Structure formats: structure tokens, C-alpha cells
Image (tube, rainbow, N blue to C red; front, side, top):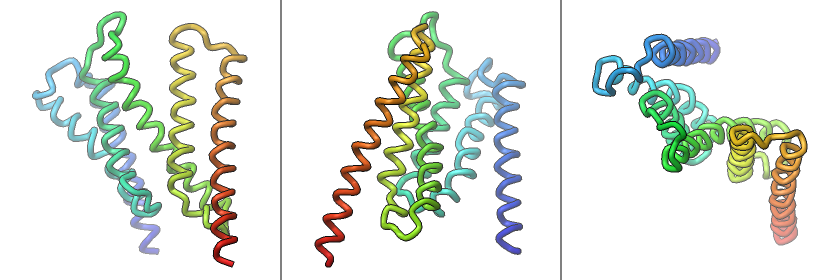
Length: 193
């Protein structure tokens, strides 16, 4: 019962912080002022607190190394970039990369956790159940896929065939790495016999 109450409090705090952050960014428009204003400082604090409340407990549960720091840095940088930086029209290469890097890291943290949780359920009596390298790799592959789709859409070249081609490339890359991992697992099992 105590875990249920703690989980409910964690969920309510997470939702509240993300709603406050959404209000600061979209309703109050904290990016219209300076970062040193009260609204800017409050929003900057929420950029760190909201992902910290979500990802620190998830990192403790999953035991993925530096997952919490990566998630907080990625989401806070993405929020700061979207809110406070005003790109030129069209954006320069530096401004474009300054947006793509935290976007990729933010998406990868979500993908990493989902991949780890799925692997935790799929690989019941298998050493791959706790494979954080596989989860992180799959999280980044998923993030690269989404960002590449957004890039193709941004330059006007996203078609069903190019999207499917990209999906095939990502799928083949993951199959290659999974086959290397299963061969390594078989060698370890054979050596232990």
C-alpha cells in the first residue's frame, strides 16, 4: 500500500511540474523576456526539475548508468533551446544543430527506457534481460529514425518510400547488432560449460 501511495504522489508531482512548465512556455511565453527575469529563472528551474522528478526514479529502478543525468541534460537543453533561443530565418547550421542534438538525446532517453522495460518483460530467463547497452542502442536508433524523418519532412523529401527505406536501414542495423550480441552470448555460455 505504501508503494502505491508513493507512486501516486510521484505521478501527481510529475504531472504538476510538466503542466507548470507547459504553462510557462506556451501561456506565459517565458521566452519573450530575458532569462534573468523572474519568469525566465522559474522556467529554467522547471526545465531541470520536471525531467529530474520523472527520470531519477526511473534510472534507480532500471539501473541504467548515467541515464538520469543524460535525461535531465537532454530535456533541459531542449526546453532552453526551444524557449529562449530565437533562430534566424532560415536557421544557421549551428542553430540547427543546437536544436537537433538535444532533441535526439531527449527522444533517446524515452526510447532507452521503453526498450529496457520491453526487454525486461520479453527476456524472462535470459542474461539479455538486464542489457542496458542494447536498450541504449535501441533508444538512440529510434531517436535517429524520428529525427531523420523530421529532417526529411523539413526539406520536403519525405515520401512513403523514403520513410520505409529509412526504417529498413534502422531495422537492419539493429538486427546486425542483435546477431553479434547473440553470438557473443553463445560463446560465453559455451565457455562456462
